[in-house]
Length: 74
Image 1 (cartoon, one colour):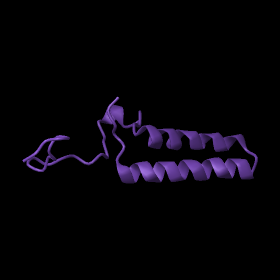
Image 2: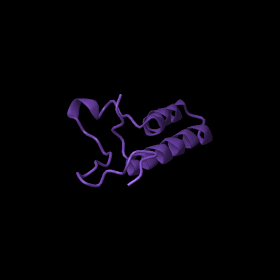
Image 3: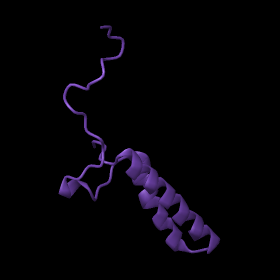
């Protein structure tokens, strides 16, 4: 799968996932396991919920700003 979760979206998902997991541990609730969903989508950089709607929060490159290939010289 291609990544469809950008850097800010990824950071927010990871933080929210950790907070939900921590709250589940603090309050001794199984609901804290729901924190695994945003945590995994942030770590894997792919959100299955975005796929049917063709949503991507990844930054796209604009033409003419591509970086040279690794090891290439100008």
